[in-house]
Structures are given as C-alpha cells and as structure tokens.
Length: 266
Picture 1 (cartoon, rainbow, N blue to C red):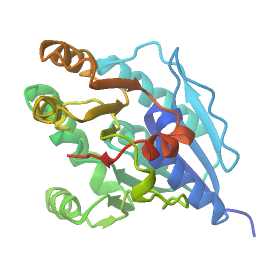
Picture 2 (cartoon, rainbow, N blue to C red):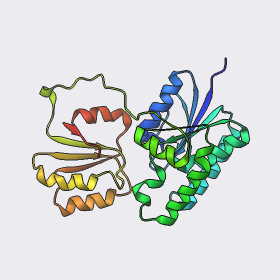
Picture 3 (cartoon, rainbow, N blue to C red):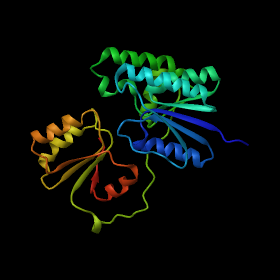
C-alpha cells in the first residue's frame, strides 16, 4: 500500500517554524509522505529536514496585498502540478490557493488555524484589510473537509463564526529529557521565545523589568515591533538587562532554555 501524500502550506520562513516541524515530523514518522511549502528570504538559513520534503519560494514582493496575491498564485500552480492526497492550509493567508487546488483536483483539504487570523492585533486598526480577510474566511473555511486549531476556546469561537466543526490539536513541544535541578538553575533570567509582534505583552514585560532589578529579560525571535521594543528599552535605560537574541535555531532552543530560570508567554 502506497503512503498517503500530504502537503502543508505556510507563508513564513520554515527554518524557525517549530510547530510545523513537529506536525510534519509526526506525520512522517506515522508513515506519511509529507511536503512542507514555505518561504525563503535573503537571510534564510539552510533547512533540510530528513523526515519530510520541503519547497520554498523566493518572492518578488515580501509584504502587503501583492505578497499574498503572488504567494497564493505560485502556491496554486505548485499544488496543481504536485501529486497529493490531501493539502493543509496553515492559516488564512494560504487558504485560497489550497482550497482552489483541492477543489479542482478533487482532493481532501484541511484548515489549520494557528490563530484567529482576522482578529489578530495587527488588523485591529485596519478595518478595510480586516474585512477582506473576513470575506476570504467566509468563502474558504466552510469549504474545507476538516478544520482544527490550538485550543478549545478558539475552536468554539471559530466554529460558531464559520458554522463548521473545529477540532483541537494542542501546540505543545515534546518534553525534554534533560533534567533541571535547583542546584543548576542559573542567574535570574526571564525568557521569551517567538515572534516579536503586537499583542504578545512584550512592552508590558519590558516595563516590568524596572521593578525587577535582579533579573534579565531575553527575547529570542524577531518581528514587526523589534525596532519599537529596542527603542523602549533604550528609553527606559534597560540595555544591560534586556537582550535581543534574534532568531535562534530550533536545535539551540533547549540549551537556551537551560540558561533561563523562567519562561514567559502572555
């Protein structure tokens, strides 16, 4: 019996997408033939997982409507020319191409809601753009054969919004085999891992560092508000206690976590 072929599509750089690495690796270990499609930037690192295949686009446009239009057009033609049994759109920005390709090829389609896409903080003051994404969601999400998201509350909200069933697959990393004891805890380090974007509570955490003179705050990641956060740190004169580590390769994250006393995710 031939292996089932599954394609996942995201718009981000694959190198640091630990969630997709876990999903694709788990399915590959279960006997599936997995292809992960994503994006390649000028500064992207080599990404060659052994468990599954990858394909990356170097886009002409890198933000705004032209980027999403270009990406979905290119994604559609790749899906059209690729043999698969099911394709999964990871968030709304890949849904048009995945849904259209699956409809024309009569293949199963799945929607993976990493977040409530039309309600992200970045769209709260951009009502026209938000309405466009809401319209895309209304015409694509109900047409998928299956939908899932990361938690029960999101599943209820989006299930009611789109009148479809959302299952839940928690976004939890595998447990570490490395033991940590009170004796080998390092200095007082507060660690954040992930995108530096609006709505993550990072500004409040940086401001709170003024009340924690014995602590350091490390931020592992990059994002839309990296510059603003650095300006806030400079304004509060916290440069010696707030460190921006940039993107950290997934293989190096366990070592980094061993150096922190607490991790924060607001």
